[in-house]
Length: 407
Image (cartoon, rainbow, N blue to C red):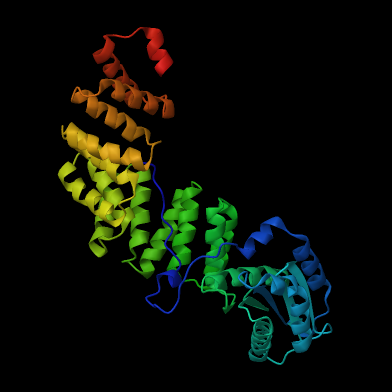
């Protein structure tokens, strides 16, 4: 089983509140920072050249709902411009189109942050009433902490991604959670170096945020910087010693370092705190299996299966446990289910072939499964040995060229 770090979901996705249907957006505005689109380039240049009194301004990104009628979306630019001019003017603000329904703007010359927020809210409500559609908004102010002025428009893009988690009619200002979301997005795009920067910036804003610290540790880990990862996980544990995903990740680090005893100890601790976390039950069961503690391993694997019955890994490991316990019929059932869920699982393919061979059943089918496992992992010696055993049962010792051909 390939080790996989599990980045804990950001806090508001674990809220106990039933008032929100929280889900990630289909499109992330922060992706525009990777593409560096013409609209964004134009806005950035104008913002850099703008003369702003007191170097104080607010930046915002607005999106008219994609569910709005086509006629409204076709006239969105004119509608937004009218709303902008109603509440602001070009002497105290600038704006640009990002696409046909999304706009970025900045304004200044306001008395205080409260009045600036009221302006944005009034613009949002006026625009929404004018087009009879939802309007999504993310804002970022400057100055903010130690961010450079040029970062304000990027922060506004991250803020609207943050807002999108709460639905198409939300307004949210940029904060540490916005950076966590952006970091997670970059992490899933495999931009680990960029994700690390987002998490580190978030930690500067919220130095005791376990989600950010844990996410930074995960990013270091998948980048191969295990010592740095360990430092972050241990820092998170000092803040909350009972944070299950942090404990799980430390256990996984020990597995990677081949210290199974320590890995199992941490995973047992995580299990004791919460016995309904899929990753904890699966990995703990797998490691106990590797330690030949089959009877202790099986309950954890079965628990993982109850939590996620669609996981092919559950059936694969159960198959390996039964096969090691000389129960080929039960093992074959588990491997067969695993193959149905994941036809490219070489371990289950080879394991199922071995189960058929041990029962002297359907040897030609067993041969096919064994060959398929070798096709997926040609250098696996165990798979090769199982293939040769099946061939010998069918035909006697096969010619050398046939072994090479099937391998």
